[in-house]
Image (tube, rainbow, N blue to C red; front, side, top):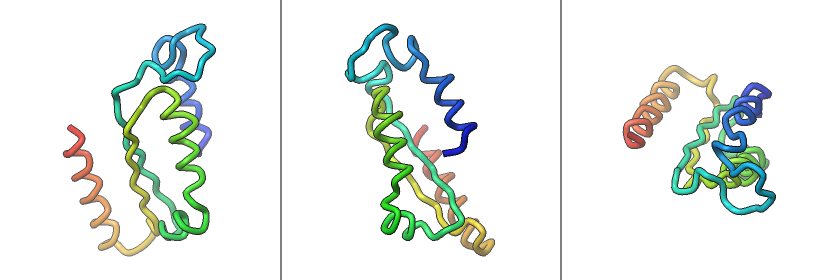
Length: 104
């Protein structure tokens, strides 16, 4: 995960907003009942990331950050080979726009 994204999570998921301040329990945070969608882009084919690397970073993000503050369900989309042809890129952009419309 890029350092800038980690810094964003640190600032946004502070005690008082995402978790109760002073609590030292593993109870769900204050975002219980909310959902999330994670969109991951990469140069390698998505199937390689899922099967060979077992989507390790994505699962870590879901388990250690998003679920910890109570977000559930967590949906994800993995877009691989982003440097592929313009046609493939247009298909993915269309799909991402559809996902955004469905979320509203």
